[in-house]
Image (cartoon, rainbow, N blue to C red):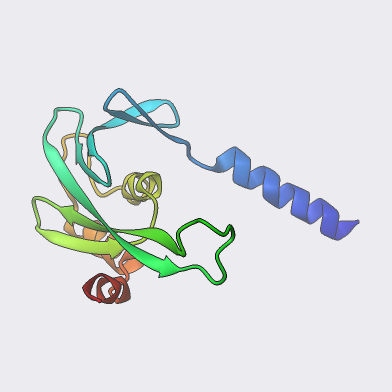
Length: 143
């Protein structure tokens, strides 16, 4: 009984307190508040602040991972994975991650890197890079 109650409270808190990222008409909303503007192009996008100053460039690269075994007889024997290079434009620092595009945006917002004027806090950029960057992913792209 205690385990069931604990698990139900844990699931409830995750759904209640999780931030929702929505992208509508080149605008990014976090919990129904407009935070950034976005320019999408397949796996690449550029985030701008509310004043349309470009602040982050995100470039996606794909690689294939073999499926073992393939699920259906006539399908591709590979999964396509995306690795993103997140570049902070003013500081020219970058992180390499396999987070989804919405998770990248959510974590940039949650980290509090940019103020409402689009100015970046260098220490928060460094913390973001240390937290979410995975240099081993770079090796997968070079294969």
